[in-house]
Length: 145
Image 1: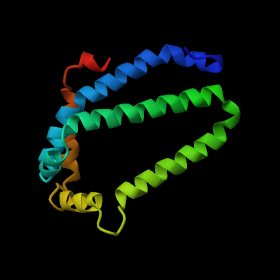
Image 2: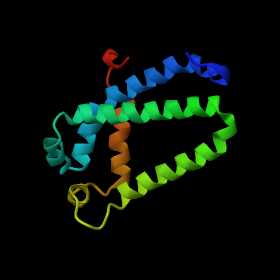
Image 3: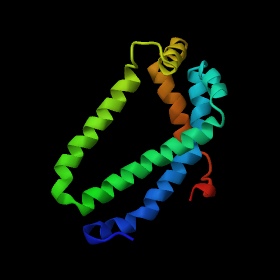
């Protein structure tokens, strides 16, 4: 149970958790489409045991972080500006690392380059393929609730 001004978030928590469940339920279909668009992903999928479980955990932890960020902002409005700057800086650093992996050859940078070499560059077709998932989503997996 939240206290203070964060009480208003209590009414949103169940909906937030349901969105998490909906998103996690879509991971298998999205991964299948991504593999069609980027065939080299099949090799990375073989390298990562239980890759769908890993993606689930990453999504759940990321969303949990977003929830905790919202709770912190509601409980400590006096620090909101500072927290937003820290959060934006962390997000920018993570995005830069992903989009431009370190120049030295790490497993991650080698994998990113190998996958990118053979992926579809047809942006419109890629969007249509992913849109197909949104138009016919997988059934909600109640295990995520």
